[in-house]
Length: 430
Ligand code: PMP
Image: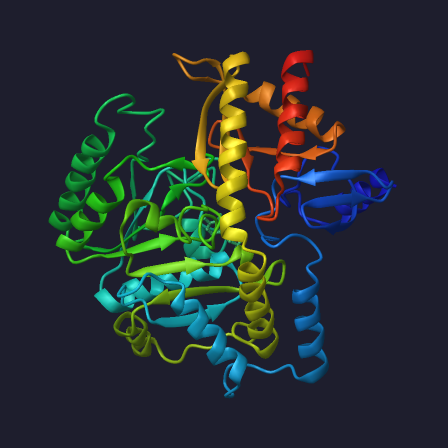
Protein backbone atom coordinates (compact mmCIF):
# COMPACT_ATOMS: atom_id res chain seq x y z
CA UNK A 1 0.00 0.00 0.00
CA UNK A 2 2.84 2.40 0.86
CA UNK A 3 4.45 1.56 -2.50
CA UNK A 4 1.23 2.51 -4.30
CA UNK A 5 1.03 5.77 -2.39
CA UNK A 6 4.62 6.55 -3.35
CA UNK A 7 3.90 5.91 -7.03
CA UNK A 8 0.85 8.15 -6.81
CA UNK A 9 2.86 10.88 -5.12
CA UNK A 10 5.57 10.80 -7.77
CA UNK A 11 2.93 11.13 -10.47
CA UNK A 12 1.17 14.16 -9.02
CA UNK A 13 3.95 16.08 -7.27
CA UNK A 14 6.99 18.00 -8.40
CA UNK A 15 10.23 16.04 -8.25
CA UNK A 16 11.52 18.74 -5.90
CA UNK A 17 8.82 17.90 -3.34
CA UNK A 18 10.86 16.83 -0.35
CA UNK A 19 10.19 13.63 1.52
CA UNK A 20 11.53 11.70 4.48
CA UNK A 21 13.32 8.47 3.44
CA UNK A 22 13.42 6.93 -0.04
CA UNK A 23 10.28 5.00 0.88
CA UNK A 24 8.36 6.91 3.54
CA UNK A 25 5.96 5.02 5.79
CA UNK A 26 2.29 5.72 5.18
CA UNK A 27 1.26 7.43 8.37
CA UNK A 28 -2.30 7.11 9.55
CA UNK A 29 -2.51 8.73 12.95
CA UNK A 30 -0.52 10.06 15.84
CA UNK A 31 -0.88 10.42 19.59
CA UNK A 32 1.43 12.46 21.78
CA UNK A 33 4.99 11.71 20.51
CA UNK A 34 4.02 8.54 18.64
CA UNK A 35 3.04 7.87 15.03
CA UNK A 36 1.18 4.84 13.68
CA UNK A 37 1.33 3.69 10.06
CA UNK A 38 -1.33 1.92 8.01
CA UNK A 39 0.11 -1.49 8.91
CA UNK A 40 -0.38 -0.71 12.61
CA UNK A 41 3.33 -0.16 13.33
CA UNK A 42 4.09 2.55 15.81
CA UNK A 43 7.10 4.85 15.90
CA UNK A 44 8.54 7.31 18.36
CA UNK A 45 8.47 10.65 16.53
CA UNK A 46 11.78 12.41 17.21
CA UNK A 47 11.45 14.97 14.41
CA UNK A 48 8.11 16.71 14.66
CA UNK A 49 8.72 20.20 16.00
CA UNK A 50 5.41 21.45 14.58
CA UNK A 51 3.28 19.24 16.83
CA UNK A 52 4.99 20.76 19.86
CA UNK A 53 2.19 19.64 22.22
CA UNK A 54 2.10 16.20 20.65
CA UNK A 55 -0.16 14.74 17.98
CA UNK A 56 -3.92 14.75 18.46
CA UNK A 57 -4.09 17.25 21.32
CA UNK A 58 -7.73 17.25 22.53
CA UNK A 59 -7.74 20.89 23.70
CA UNK A 60 -6.56 22.20 20.34
CA UNK A 61 -8.97 19.97 18.43
CA UNK A 62 -11.86 21.18 20.59
CA UNK A 63 -10.95 24.85 20.06
CA UNK A 64 -10.70 24.38 16.28
CA UNK A 65 -13.99 22.51 16.19
CA UNK A 66 -15.80 25.11 18.28
CA UNK A 67 -14.50 27.97 16.12
CA UNK A 68 -15.23 26.26 12.80
CA UNK A 69 -18.83 25.74 13.91
CA UNK A 70 -19.17 29.38 14.96
CA UNK A 71 -17.44 31.73 12.58
CA UNK A 72 -14.73 31.94 9.94
CA UNK A 73 -13.64 35.47 9.36
CA UNK A 74 -10.55 37.63 9.43
CA UNK A 75 -8.60 40.27 11.26
CA UNK A 76 -10.41 43.16 9.58
CA UNK A 77 -13.11 42.69 12.22
CA UNK A 78 -12.76 43.09 15.94
CA UNK A 79 -12.98 39.88 17.93
CA UNK A 80 -11.84 39.01 21.37
CA UNK A 81 -9.69 35.95 20.63
CA UNK A 82 -7.45 37.87 18.22
CA UNK A 83 -6.68 40.62 20.74
CA UNK A 84 -6.32 38.09 23.53
CA UNK A 85 -3.98 35.91 21.47
CA UNK A 86 -1.84 38.86 20.39
CA UNK A 87 -1.49 40.10 23.98
CA UNK A 88 -0.55 36.62 25.15
CA UNK A 89 2.18 36.41 22.47
CA UNK A 90 3.58 39.81 23.47
CA UNK A 91 3.57 38.75 27.13
CA UNK A 92 5.93 35.90 26.21
CA UNK A 93 8.64 38.42 25.32
CA UNK A 94 11.14 39.44 27.99
CA UNK A 95 9.92 42.26 30.21
CA UNK A 96 11.01 45.68 29.09
CA UNK A 97 12.05 44.38 25.67
CA UNK A 98 9.84 46.89 23.83
CA UNK A 99 8.62 44.01 21.64
CA UNK A 100 4.99 45.01 21.96
CA UNK A 101 3.40 44.65 18.53
CA UNK A 102 2.28 41.56 16.59
CA UNK A 103 1.65 40.87 12.89
CA UNK A 104 0.08 37.48 12.13
CA UNK A 105 0.65 35.36 9.02
CA UNK A 106 0.54 31.62 8.22
CA UNK A 107 4.06 30.22 8.03
CA UNK A 108 7.71 30.68 8.89
CA UNK A 109 8.61 31.70 5.34
CA UNK A 110 6.01 34.45 5.38
CA UNK A 111 7.18 35.59 8.80
CA UNK A 112 10.78 35.89 7.55
CA UNK A 113 9.63 37.76 4.42
CA UNK A 114 7.65 40.14 6.58
CA UNK A 115 10.51 40.59 9.05
CA UNK A 116 12.78 41.60 6.17
CA UNK A 117 10.19 44.00 4.79
CA UNK A 118 9.71 45.60 8.18
CA UNK A 119 13.45 46.11 8.63
CA UNK A 120 13.78 47.59 5.16
CA UNK A 121 10.79 49.88 5.66
CA UNK A 122 11.94 51.04 9.11
CA UNK A 123 15.53 51.79 8.07
CA UNK A 124 14.93 52.97 4.50
CA UNK A 125 17.75 50.58 3.54
CA UNK A 126 17.79 47.30 1.64
CA UNK A 127 20.76 45.15 2.59
CA UNK A 128 20.19 42.09 4.78
CA UNK A 129 23.13 40.20 6.27
CA UNK A 130 22.49 36.46 6.75
CA UNK A 131 24.76 33.62 7.86
CA UNK A 132 26.07 30.78 5.76
CA UNK A 133 24.50 27.30 6.03
CA UNK A 134 21.12 28.62 7.17
CA UNK A 135 17.54 27.77 6.25
CA UNK A 136 14.92 30.52 6.48
CA UNK A 137 12.16 29.40 4.09
CA UNK A 138 11.10 28.94 0.50
CA UNK A 139 9.27 32.17 -0.48
CA UNK A 140 11.22 34.65 -2.61
CA UNK A 141 12.77 36.72 0.17
CA UNK A 142 13.22 33.95 2.73
CA UNK A 143 14.79 31.76 0.04
CA UNK A 144 17.15 34.59 -0.88
CA UNK A 145 18.57 34.48 2.66
CA UNK A 146 18.57 30.66 2.75
CA UNK A 147 22.22 29.82 2.31
CA UNK A 148 22.39 26.09 2.93
CA UNK A 149 23.67 24.33 -0.16
CA UNK A 150 21.11 21.57 0.27
CA UNK A 151 18.06 23.83 0.33
CA UNK A 152 19.30 26.40 -2.14
CA UNK A 153 22.12 24.90 -4.27
CA UNK A 154 22.70 28.16 -6.14
CA UNK A 155 22.69 30.00 -2.89
CA UNK A 156 26.12 31.41 -3.04
CA UNK A 157 26.32 32.41 -6.72
CA UNK A 158 22.92 33.83 -7.53
CA UNK A 159 22.02 36.17 -4.71
CA UNK A 160 19.81 39.21 -5.15
CA UNK A 161 21.97 42.28 -4.54
CA UNK A 162 20.23 43.08 -1.24
CA UNK A 163 21.64 39.95 0.43
CA UNK A 164 25.08 39.75 2.02
CA UNK A 165 26.30 36.45 3.42
CA UNK A 166 28.54 36.34 6.49
CA UNK A 167 30.49 33.34 7.75
CA UNK A 168 28.73 30.92 10.11
CA UNK A 169 30.27 30.93 13.60
CA UNK A 170 30.23 27.17 14.19
CA UNK A 171 32.78 26.54 16.97
CA UNK A 172 33.15 22.86 16.00
CA UNK A 173 34.13 23.37 12.39
CA UNK A 174 35.18 25.90 9.82
CA UNK A 175 37.49 28.83 9.65
CA UNK A 176 38.27 29.39 13.32
CA UNK A 177 37.75 25.97 14.87
CA UNK A 178 39.30 25.72 18.31
CA UNK A 179 40.18 29.40 18.50
CA UNK A 180 38.56 32.38 20.25
CA UNK A 181 35.62 31.70 17.98
CA UNK A 182 33.31 34.61 18.83
CA UNK A 183 36.10 37.18 18.70
CA UNK A 184 37.42 36.03 15.33
CA UNK A 185 34.01 35.81 13.69
CA UNK A 186 33.00 39.18 15.11
CA UNK A 187 36.13 40.79 13.69
CA UNK A 188 35.20 39.37 10.26
CA UNK A 189 31.60 40.52 10.64
CA UNK A 190 32.78 44.03 11.52
CA UNK A 191 34.93 44.08 8.38
CA UNK A 192 31.97 42.80 6.29
CA UNK A 193 29.69 45.51 7.67
CA UNK A 194 32.27 48.24 7.10
CA UNK A 195 32.71 47.00 3.55
CA UNK A 196 28.95 47.25 2.98
CA UNK A 197 28.87 50.79 4.38
CA UNK A 198 31.83 51.79 2.18
CA UNK A 199 29.87 50.45 -0.85
CA UNK A 200 26.78 52.48 0.06
CA UNK A 201 24.95 49.26 1.04
CA UNK A 202 24.29 50.12 4.70
CA UNK A 203 22.70 47.17 6.53
CA UNK A 204 18.95 47.24 7.05
CA UNK A 205 19.17 44.07 9.12
CA UNK A 206 21.22 41.20 10.43
CA UNK A 207 19.17 37.98 10.36
CA UNK A 208 20.03 34.69 12.01
CA UNK A 209 18.72 31.86 14.11
CA UNK A 210 19.73 32.26 17.74
CA UNK A 211 20.96 28.66 17.69
CA UNK A 212 22.36 27.22 14.43
CA UNK A 213 19.35 25.12 13.47
CA UNK A 214 20.41 23.77 10.14
CA UNK A 215 23.77 22.72 11.61
CA UNK A 216 21.82 20.57 14.06
CA UNK A 217 21.29 22.85 17.03
CA UNK A 218 24.84 24.13 17.43
CA UNK A 219 24.89 26.76 20.17
CA UNK A 220 26.49 30.04 19.10
CA UNK A 221 29.84 30.74 20.73
CA UNK A 222 29.62 32.80 23.92
CA UNK A 223 29.36 36.47 23.17
CA UNK A 224 28.80 36.11 19.42
CA UNK A 225 25.15 37.17 19.23
CA UNK A 226 25.57 40.09 21.67
CA UNK A 227 28.66 41.22 19.76
CA UNK A 228 26.98 40.87 16.36
CA UNK A 229 23.89 42.82 17.48
CA UNK A 230 26.14 45.60 18.80
CA UNK A 231 28.12 45.82 15.53
CA UNK A 232 24.96 45.93 13.43
CA UNK A 233 23.21 48.49 15.64
CA UNK A 234 26.29 50.72 15.70
CA UNK A 235 25.87 50.95 11.92
CA UNK A 236 22.16 51.71 12.11
CA UNK A 237 20.88 48.23 11.26
CA UNK A 238 18.17 46.16 12.99
CA UNK A 239 18.53 42.64 14.39
CA UNK A 240 16.10 39.90 13.34
CA UNK A 241 15.94 36.66 15.33
CA UNK A 242 14.45 33.75 13.36
CA UNK A 243 12.80 31.77 16.16
CA UNK A 244 10.70 29.57 13.88
CA UNK A 245 12.58 26.44 15.01
CA UNK A 246 14.32 27.27 18.23
CA UNK A 247 11.70 29.41 19.95
CA UNK A 248 8.50 28.60 21.84
CA UNK A 249 9.85 26.70 24.82
CA UNK A 250 11.84 24.07 22.96
CA UNK A 251 15.16 25.14 24.47
CA UNK A 252 13.79 24.35 27.93
CA UNK A 253 16.04 26.69 29.90
CA UNK A 254 14.60 29.71 28.05
CA UNK A 255 11.37 30.26 26.13
CA UNK A 256 13.20 31.92 23.22
CA UNK A 257 16.48 30.98 21.59
CA UNK A 258 17.81 34.54 21.78
CA UNK A 259 17.48 34.46 25.57
CA UNK A 260 20.26 31.86 25.56
CA UNK A 261 22.57 34.68 24.50
CA UNK A 262 21.04 37.37 26.74
CA UNK A 263 20.12 39.63 23.81
CA UNK A 264 16.90 41.34 22.72
CA UNK A 265 16.21 41.44 18.96
CA UNK A 266 14.33 44.22 17.18
CA UNK A 267 12.22 41.79 15.16
CA UNK A 268 11.31 38.19 16.03
CA UNK A 269 9.93 35.72 13.47
CA UNK A 270 7.85 32.81 14.77
CA UNK A 271 5.77 29.95 13.31
CA UNK A 272 5.99 26.12 13.40
CA UNK A 273 4.63 25.07 16.83
CA UNK A 274 2.23 28.03 17.22
CA UNK A 275 -0.76 26.08 15.85
CA UNK A 276 0.40 22.54 16.72
CA UNK A 277 -0.12 21.59 13.07
CA UNK A 278 -2.53 24.34 12.13
CA UNK A 279 -0.58 26.95 10.11
CA UNK A 280 0.21 30.06 12.14
CA UNK A 281 3.18 32.39 11.78
CA UNK A 282 3.96 35.86 12.97
CA UNK A 283 6.34 38.68 13.66
CA UNK A 284 6.75 40.38 17.00
CA UNK A 285 8.48 43.76 16.99
CA UNK A 286 8.18 47.27 18.40
CA UNK A 287 5.34 49.60 17.47
CA UNK A 288 7.81 51.99 15.83
CA UNK A 289 9.14 49.31 13.46
CA UNK A 290 5.69 47.84 12.78
CA UNK A 291 4.31 51.27 11.94
CA UNK A 292 6.97 51.78 9.26
CA UNK A 293 4.98 49.28 7.18
CA UNK A 294 2.36 52.01 6.61
CA UNK A 295 4.70 53.46 3.99
CA UNK A 296 3.97 50.33 1.92
CA UNK A 297 0.19 50.46 2.19
CA UNK A 298 -2.03 48.21 4.27
CA UNK A 299 -1.10 44.91 5.86
CA UNK A 300 -3.58 42.06 5.69
CA UNK A 301 -3.47 38.26 5.55
CA UNK A 302 -6.72 36.39 4.79
CA UNK A 303 -6.04 33.58 7.25
CA UNK A 304 -3.30 35.15 9.38
CA UNK A 305 -4.96 36.29 12.59
CA UNK A 306 -8.31 34.81 11.54
CA UNK A 307 -10.89 33.71 14.08
CA UNK A 308 -9.80 30.10 13.62
CA UNK A 309 -6.11 30.83 13.84
CA UNK A 310 -6.54 32.96 16.97
CA UNK A 311 -8.64 30.33 18.75
CA UNK A 312 -6.24 27.53 17.89
CA UNK A 313 -3.24 29.67 18.85
CA UNK A 314 -4.78 30.46 22.23
CA UNK A 315 -5.55 26.80 22.87
CA UNK A 316 -1.92 25.94 22.11
CA UNK A 317 -0.63 28.55 24.56
CA UNK A 318 -3.04 27.28 27.24
CA UNK A 319 -1.93 23.69 26.69
CA UNK A 320 1.75 24.63 26.89
CA UNK A 321 1.15 26.03 30.36
CA UNK A 322 -1.21 23.25 31.50
CA UNK A 323 1.12 20.49 30.33
CA UNK A 324 4.18 22.39 31.66
CA UNK A 325 5.97 21.66 28.40
CA UNK A 326 8.89 24.06 28.69
CA UNK A 327 9.88 22.40 31.97
CA UNK A 328 9.44 18.97 30.38
CA UNK A 329 11.68 20.04 27.47
CA UNK A 330 14.33 21.09 29.97
CA UNK A 331 14.16 17.91 32.07
CA UNK A 332 13.77 15.32 29.35
CA UNK A 333 16.23 17.23 27.14
CA UNK A 334 18.93 17.21 29.84
CA UNK A 335 18.33 13.54 30.53
CA UNK A 336 18.55 12.73 26.82
CA UNK A 337 21.67 14.84 26.22
CA UNK A 338 23.41 13.19 29.20
CA UNK A 339 22.48 9.74 27.89
CA UNK A 340 23.74 10.59 24.39
CA UNK A 341 27.02 11.90 25.81
CA UNK A 342 27.40 8.69 27.81
CA UNK A 343 26.78 6.74 24.59
CA UNK A 344 29.55 8.73 22.92
CA UNK A 345 32.02 7.27 25.42
CA UNK A 346 31.40 3.82 23.94
CA UNK A 347 30.86 4.70 20.28
CA UNK A 348 33.64 6.66 18.55
CA UNK A 349 31.31 7.50 15.65
CA UNK A 350 29.54 10.00 17.91
CA UNK A 351 31.21 13.40 17.88
CA UNK A 352 29.84 16.45 19.67
CA UNK A 353 26.29 16.44 21.05
CA UNK A 354 24.83 19.85 20.24
CA UNK A 355 21.91 21.83 21.51
CA UNK A 356 19.78 22.44 24.54
CA UNK A 357 16.40 21.24 25.77
CA UNK A 358 14.56 19.19 23.17
CA UNK A 359 16.56 20.67 20.32
CA UNK A 360 19.59 18.41 20.10
CA UNK A 361 22.00 17.35 17.37
CA UNK A 362 24.12 14.22 17.48
CA UNK A 363 27.02 14.84 15.13
CA UNK A 364 28.43 11.64 13.60
CA UNK A 365 32.08 11.76 12.51
CA UNK A 366 34.60 9.22 11.22
CA UNK A 367 37.35 10.90 13.20
CA UNK A 368 36.87 13.25 16.13
CA UNK A 369 40.07 15.13 15.32
CA UNK A 370 39.40 15.81 11.63
CA UNK A 371 35.60 15.84 12.15
CA UNK A 372 35.23 13.99 8.83
CA UNK A 373 31.44 13.78 8.41
CA UNK A 374 29.95 10.28 8.68
CA UNK A 375 27.13 11.09 6.26
CA UNK A 376 26.55 7.66 4.69
CA UNK A 377 26.63 6.11 8.16
CA UNK A 378 24.12 8.69 9.44
CA UNK A 379 21.69 7.90 6.60
CA UNK A 380 21.99 4.14 7.16
CA UNK A 381 21.54 4.55 10.91
CA UNK A 382 18.32 6.52 10.33
CA UNK A 383 16.97 3.72 8.11
CA UNK A 384 17.83 1.12 10.75
CA UNK A 385 16.31 3.23 13.54
CA UNK A 386 13.11 3.41 11.54
CA UNK A 387 13.02 -0.38 11.32
CA UNK A 388 13.33 -0.36 15.09
CA UNK A 389 10.40 2.05 15.43
CA UNK A 390 12.15 5.41 15.85
CA UNK A 391 11.80 8.29 13.39
CA UNK A 392 15.02 10.31 13.49
CA UNK A 393 16.59 12.10 10.52
CA UNK A 394 19.72 13.90 9.44
CA UNK A 395 20.46 17.56 8.98
CA UNK A 396 23.42 19.92 8.41
CA UNK A 397 25.35 20.98 5.36
CA UNK A 398 27.17 17.66 5.60
CA UNK A 399 24.06 15.52 6.35
CA UNK A 400 25.87 13.96 9.29
CA UNK A 401 23.90 15.24 12.27
CA UNK A 402 20.97 13.32 13.74
CA UNK A 403 18.57 16.10 14.59
CA UNK A 404 16.41 15.55 17.64
CA UNK A 405 13.36 17.82 17.89
CA UNK A 406 10.43 15.72 19.09
CA UNK A 407 7.09 16.94 20.42
CA UNK A 408 7.79 18.60 23.77
CA UNK A 409 5.74 15.97 25.60
CA UNK A 410 8.46 13.35 25.07
CA UNK A 411 8.82 11.21 28.19
CA UNK A 412 11.97 10.00 29.97
CA UNK A 413 10.87 6.41 29.13
CA UNK A 414 10.65 7.13 25.42
CA UNK A 415 13.94 9.04 25.50
CA UNK A 416 15.59 6.03 27.16
CA UNK A 417 14.05 3.74 24.57
CA UNK A 418 15.43 5.84 21.70
CA UNK A 419 18.91 5.83 23.27
CA UNK A 420 18.72 2.04 23.76
CA UNK A 421 17.77 1.56 20.10
CA UNK A 422 20.61 3.83 18.99
CA UNK A 423 23.03 1.91 21.20
CA UNK A 424 21.83 -1.30 19.58
CA UNK A 425 22.32 0.01 16.05
CA UNK A 426 25.76 1.42 16.83
CA UNK A 427 26.77 -1.85 18.50
CA UNK A 428 25.28 -4.34 16.03
CA UNK A 429 25.94 -2.33 12.90
CA UNK A 430 23.63 -0.89 10.32
N1 PMP B 1 12.92 29.66 9.43
C1 PMP B 1 13.45 28.56 9.98
C2 PMP B 1 14.59 28.69 10.92
C3 PMP B 1 12.94 27.30 9.67
O1 PMP B 1 13.47 26.21 10.20
C4 PMP B 1 11.85 27.21 8.77
C5 PMP B 1 11.21 25.87 8.41
N2 PMP B 1 12.02 24.76 8.50
C6 PMP B 1 11.34 28.37 8.20
C7 PMP B 1 11.89 29.59 8.58
C8 PMP B 1 10.21 28.34 7.23
O2 PMP B 1 9.04 27.97 7.83
P1 PMP B 1 7.80 27.37 6.98
O3 PMP B 1 8.18 26.01 6.52
O4 PMP B 1 6.68 27.38 7.97
O5 PMP B 1 7.53 28.31 5.85
